[in-house]
Image 1: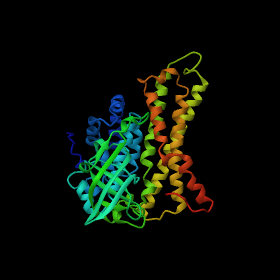
Image 2: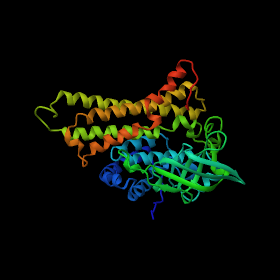
Image 3: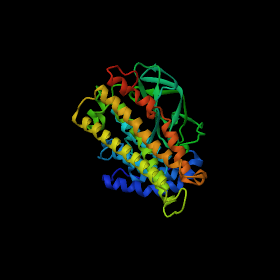
Image 4: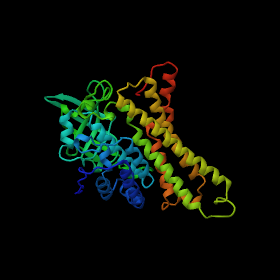
Amino acid sequence: MTTRADTSCKTLTRGELLDQASKLTPILKERAPLTEGLRRVPTETVDDLLASGLHLIGVPRKFGGLDVDYGISLDVGVELAKGCASTSWCYSLWVAHAWLVGFWPLQAQEEIFGASPNVLCSSSLSPGKSTCTPADGGYHLTGRWEFSSGCDSADWIMLGVAGIDQRNWALVPKEDREIVDTWFVSGLRGSGSKDIVVEDAFIPAHRVVEVTTAGDTDLTGWAIHGQDRYRVPIPVLLGWDLVAPMIGVARGMAEEFIAKLTGTTGPGRTADSAAIHLRLSQACAEADAAQALMDLDVAEILRKGREGEPFNALERARFRRDKAFCTQLGLQAVNRLFDLSGGHALFESEPMQRLHRDAQAIAHRDGLIMDLGGQQYGRVALGLQPDGAI
């Protein structure tokens, strides 16, 4: 059984949090082969993350979370991904889910965080193959969902549900779900993004929330917590947590590339090569540009939440576009360096091949594909109505 350190009384600054992350990065890198082999985040890594207090960035202050800018969790995600993209991916989602719990009625939040803030929640937010039927005081939920990253370590799971008006998510305790191990993949192997099965579980009404208007016209979370992140429509802020690992992978690839080539001489792919210089320069610029755009957008989003400014359709579409564009920049950086890394980079013992595979996996996420994520901005900019969620 996992023993989780009590971090609820810690007060951590931004600098201390980033220092904690940088101390974990080499440990995660050393454990990356183990993480891939297990196809989930190892228990010792989960313990290290909880002991560090890094997860508390997402937990509402009311329940022992840190009073820091939500954007710091993205900086942490970037740093951790330099060591292990799968761990960063799961960490980033656990933080995002802790934030999302704050949109539920207070009774549900108290059930999750009332005893301790050291609680992890995974998700599968598409309704999947599910049915949700009304019952006295709640609903009966049955279904199967895919791609629940970090579910092996989670105490609760957040599931999209079908059969109710609007778009709804339900909170389900681990006792009411079964994990089906389907995660045999080429990239993000350690994320453990397995299937979830629920059979006729009773879900009290207070554990089901309508998410379409949450943080927009429904300010339940803001009324409870008064934090800027709860006066922002969920689709506007959600998703950056998945961009951060891609930027970290790009930075990790650049570090590996530099380490491999520094001090090499002679013809071909060595530190003397102009082709190497140009590729490295371009890749680092792409990673820096992705980081800068993410930081700029998230700062704007949180400022608008803090000041209570509404988000118009073009802004929403722009933020969705930028999530995909930052991902594309990170992928370009990774591919640019890997393509000039030679045969040795293909060995399973080499971190570069793992970073390359993980980057491809991240870029396959629907919301991070430019052809999909960027389309809505073009429609709205041309005076058309969006034909997808923004």
